[in-house]
Length: 604
Image 1: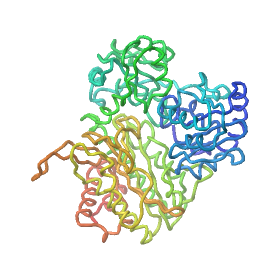
Image 2: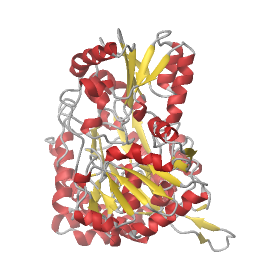
Image 3: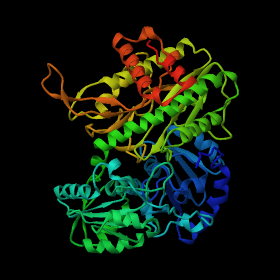
Image 4: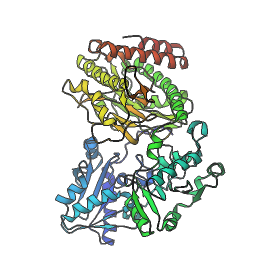
């Protein structure tokens, strides 16, 4: 299915749907209701049936919330969506607050109506998040009331059905490790935590653990399900049985019992008196309450699958390399097309995003889907790091500024994510200076060697130093984890200023994406994926060092580089990278495109 660019959401949603919710709240004797963006599975991309905030308010951003009161309504969004939230929601209906820094809790403490009864759906809130809200509510005598059924679901008359896409088997040559071995290892980790079992609620963890994939979530090959895994490795999978084929049943074997989703709460009774590991970052407050009601002792801890999943095995790394070669060839075809067509003045943001997806689908063997909605931003839109073009915002591409495209693909052997920035016409000296500084930061994070135990937080400043030197910065993280034919954003590793204490380990895939954004004018970002290499002792050194190897293969636009700003070592890195791109991608191209690639990969 191709990406669509229709105008999603909009002020009419709130005008139509908020009154219906208010009527239902009155029937429940509630003064208001809290509506987070999150769904029951904490998905980044929500199935249509779970995108409650968008249906209610018209806001389609990936981070937000609303509080609906009987006589007013408040929208919460962070700095990424300051403009979008006001464009998509009705300012006569909503007031606006910052989501950052415990936004809803801050509002409860300072502005919420004294003594109000506010409902919430415990399946949509983490236990720690709920405690923060309850503490804040106490300052104004507010009662937070858990709802057995979500009142929004009650009034959502045309709500889509829950997705029920067929589950598939991730073959061993791509998964690298049999699911029985994975379950045994995870079980040992559960025992090490002093627990008898663990409840897994994150779809990527379940998909990786059982070597299965699905199609319930847009752009991510995930099945919606829940798992209970015992310390001996026996596993209960709670999933819509309509999604499970005979092949999947045979693959899972008799150590994995398949149950209806509705059987989960009942099955918890078998854990009475047992210690059960649950991750408060991925499981909801409802899960914690259900376990306690079943008589289990809850052990709070990290999802035991998250770290092993992040450390890719040899098959996963080799698969990712192969996927990146095919994807890089497709991106190179697009870059060639853009370089020749953009100066003609006939392109716009949507045609470029469509062309890139078309090239991927026609030329990149095995493509299952794009890995996220393409960020296709020209000029001032390139300065919005999370911009999503639609028919209303679509800009024509003209000479005089920059075009930024951030995109990726989902392949059975790997997940890709790449950003390239290109000039249309002659770039200014300022554009070259900023681009080169971003490139210098990108190179610094590519070549660094670091000891075991180092977190991404310790490396983040390397990518920022060249732009800090000019008094500049960017307001997003420098790197996120990426799955192996799973989510394009995964943890627990990241490279960012803020708290990211998880040490980087061999096999982890992370993005390397410093940037610079001049509001109202242009944006710059250079993004490659890279993986953490095995520790080696550097000649003359006395302890093993990890490093990075770049996965992404596509040319970086030399027209935006100011060579005088590059050191000899940086120039050598760039030339070696381009030589590698030409050597590995060139054989997948032919004719004019291959000649163009050789030209743009020539040494600086």
